[in-house]
Image (cartoon, rainbow, N blue to C red; front, side, top):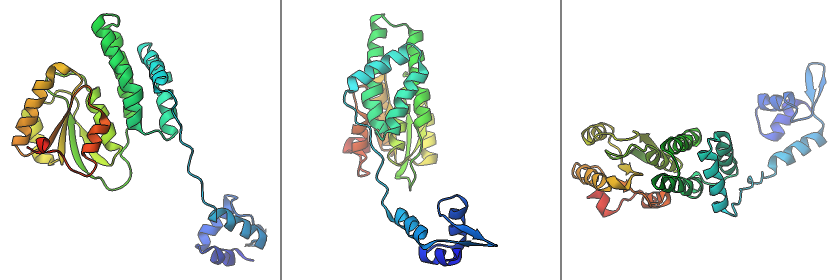
Length: 258
């Protein structure tokens, strides 16, 4: 049969069928200026199109502790390529980026913080490891397709110079269809409130890595709530999944709402 007839059988436009012939998906023979399609080839092509594509296999992690220990070695030794490869394989295998941050990155970063406080790890090595994590997250953080659930501003409290905490919160929220503006570290409260008045976010997240500024973060939250901005504080030990759970139905607890 001619290509135009085959297109009708397939229920597509002639140009679509022609594109399949050109890229080799649909077998055809050119006779003069026309393309002829053998009925058997058409039936095979149609059967292949109607066969459901199985979902991609998902990587199953058997031992997060082992993976996190390996990740710790990579980032403390400055092996950024190896660290990137670990994350890329997990994310590429269908592992949720929130799981990657909670079970791969977070334990390694906690261990780094402990080693720094004990004096067994230098500030330079700690900073290098943190920057590696930030660059890896920048590479994998993309807004998911679909209508955004709402807008959120993310920052750290005054006195906490570690931007990674806000970066991790931003990546987690983007993975759940939130439109996120990550303001980085130490945005002054007045400036944050002024920007919030303009952007009108659904909520604000103050994320911190330094436990010494928890009181400052709580004071910021109280002032923001008083100004009408629903605000959450993510302190060390708080899981990203807990933050997402609070927002799972678009509802914040009474404390966040004031």
